[in-house]
Amino acid sequence: MTEDATVTAGPSPHRHTFAPAKIAGKFQGKHIISVDQFAKDDLEILFDATKSIRKRSRQHDRGLTEIAAGRVMASLFYESSTRTDMSFQAAMRRLGGDVIAASNGVRFSSVYKGENLADTVRAAGCYADVIVLRHPQVGSSYEAAYFLDKLNQRIDKRTVVVSGGDGVGEHPTQALLDLFTIIDSKGALDHQSITLVGDLKNGRTVHSLSKLIAYYRPKGTRLNMVAPETLRMPESIIAMLTDLDVEIHETEALDDVLGESDVLYWTRIQEERFANKEAYDAIKDHFIMVPELLDQAPKNAVLMHPLPRKHEMGTVEDHEGLDADPRSIYFEQMENGMFVRMALLAKVLREAYV
Ligand code: ASP
Ligand code: CP
Image (cartoon, rainbow, N blue to C red; front, side, top):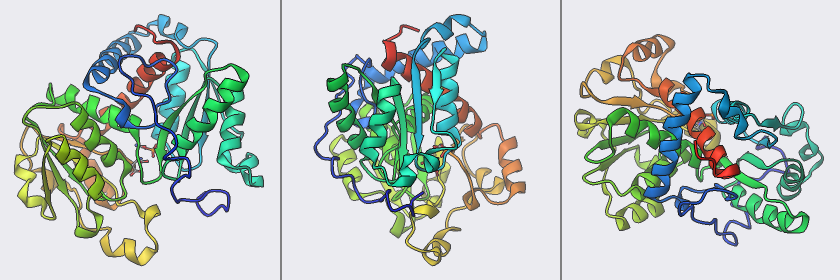
């Protein structure tokens, strides 16, 4: 999709003219486009709702299907996705809502005729109550929110956009499910040594997650950032974390921190963000998680990954070895994604008490 003339990857012009509302205890009717909107209290509300929804889902509680009955979610994905798209769709359906999308995806919508993001979002805004948007342009969800608010005023409606990832910017709902999974598996966020490994420059999941950890204001938590020099975490995020007194340790050597890590958050080198294949090939094998490496991590560590996985988790045989280790929790993480998104949709659409 990125090669399409109508979809550019530079920052959106409206990124700086729209400031998303803080959640401040009230989710209903709010666009969800950055983790900057969340404070610890909001996360606690959302995570309590997630636990309740997970329990009720496992008991096949039919009451859940009343929460979004009669409501419609539009799925607008300009970049490929398996988990975010499917888990949002599953979440909406499990809450009793409906899902719409352009038949055969955005590629075959009027985007193909050159329609811009603002008009595409406004079309979806006329038909849906919530739009999940993934787009290659940083700030695209801000742009969507900006134009949706104008439309909402005009047609007296309250359609919201939820970001499913904007280029190398943010992936806020991934961070919500990641933080939920860390707290769920470790019991708390305080006093954890969390190690982010891989493409910290282009990986939107680690941008959102490290900020969200800071907003949770944990005590004694350390963020280790392991990346080759060219793929370091952006300076702006490091500065923001430092301002919030997060203890950060940046290194190129995994050995420095592997033995002390309570959480290992592995990431894919973001091939699609590289200027050319040579640049990607030169770095793609830098950090590879294999069972022998996981053996060197503490016995009570957990291994997470937002997925999909490629070279950074070795071969298919390595995948099998890693999957068999009880410390690998990326499939639980993936399932939690659906429950967190159910909770978020329930709150955003109805402020539902779940
Ligand atoms: N699926 C995640 C994302 O879209 C992580 C990845 O693709 O590596 O950001
Ligand atoms: N974690 C994640 O965003 O996966 P997808 O790219 O498959 O949606």
